[in-house]
Picture 1 (spheres, rainbow, N blue to C red):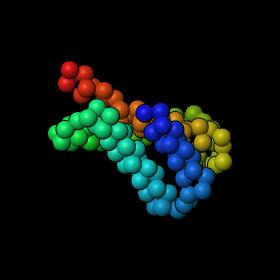
Picture 2 (picture 1 turned 120 degrees about the vertical axis):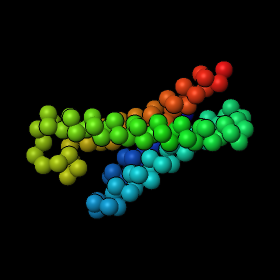
Picture 3 (picture 1 turned 30 degrees about the vertical axis):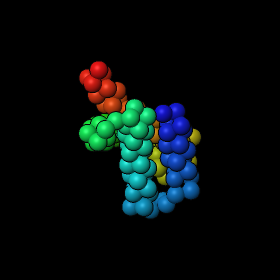
Picture 4 (picture 1 turned 90 degrees about the horizontal axis):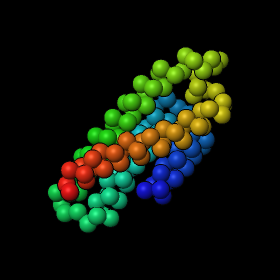
Length: 126
């Protein structure tokens, strides 16, 4: 799980630094990373615990639901936090160091959001 987290943070930071700055291209790049992270967490957990076909399906569903809830909560938190940052312009257009810290935190929350439902499902299985 640590490797998935590190790869998610690295991918998010690389897309932020070198990725498309277009309104659609940048958002789609981040969404692709979100989907890949959710799938990686679900597949890793199912593979490492030698789940059957039903276990794989449950893992994928739980990971996707948890990841989407995490993205929604991150969006709500960002909307609540932005007025207190006192930035001139948007955070996306600024090169403020906080932007890169937030991108890394979003990646970590994304992995955590995908993993927590799997943890809860595993607690119910035993």
